[in-house]
Amino acid sequence: MNNSINKNLVKDFLVNLQSNIVETIEILDGKNFLNDSWQRKEGGGGNTCILENGNVFERAGVGFSHVIGTQLPKSASDAHPEVTNRQWEAMGVSLVFHPHNPYVPTVHMNVRFFIASKKGEEDIWWFGGGMDLTPYYPFLEDVTHFHQTLKDTIDPYGKNLYTKFKNDCDDYFFLNHRNEPRGVGGVFYDDFNKKDFNHSFEFTKSIGQSLLNAYLPIVQKRKDEIFDDRHKQFQLFRRSRYVEFNLLQDRGTLFGIQSKGRVESILMSMPPLVKWTYDFTPKKGSDEEKLYTDFLIKRDWISD
Image 1 (cartoon, rainbow, N blue to C red):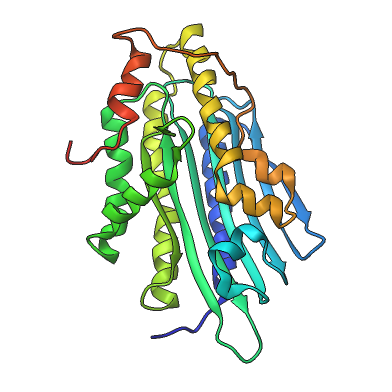
Image 2 (cartoon, rainbow, N blue to C red):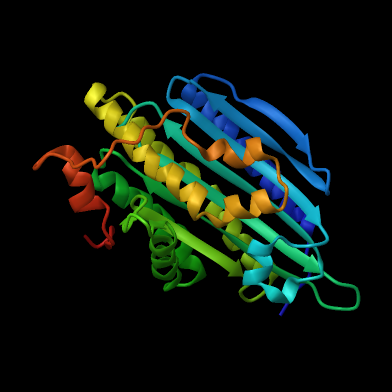
């Protein structure tokens, strides 16, 4: 096993990935991102790129962070007691795009690298990440395209990996208190250190680089769909589920807060507008009901 670890190579890739995605979205939206560099007192820093009230996106956030510490927050050490009392570094790119048009789904992606070191002992490291889609008025062909792109990306690394990571995504992005999925899933993986560093790094690069191919064709197809206030109000209502998941369950949010990360950057994933409607029930036979009956279910999107 080749465990020759090159942290700088990972960092360079992540910085370039952020830059490439930002430049592409600026061309699509027609409005530029604000670049906000920041430093973390405990060690490290990052760059948050944020676009608000654009032509296509109400909010698009693409963040790079590289944070360093000597004591892991409880949320991480509970899951990985073997890295307690080690110096650690965590770096990654995380993004969330919230569109204006309710026919365009929200997308989330994250790719990250973690390494913990102790003098005289072997480094402990892994990659993690994935992406998922949260539609409001979905089209089966769009969901199938998203999942097929991810499967095509992952298959060269193992024919069973897409199914495993798709199921892991379904399990992770599930609102336990609502007993419903957040969206139509995607792939999710963590603690990934298969074969050697280079193999695991190449896999993670493939995931990060597939975001634009998986998502942009959907945006291009749906961004000019006609919608009215009913569609917008339902989008705002469904966004409340997004907020609930991020604040109550998301491990990345918890890690960022507990590790004293920059709160503005951690919470850039929140939609700018959202509403909670008491005991909402969609009308029978409506497009809103179709979201629940046909899409917020565990399903093989490619075979179906």
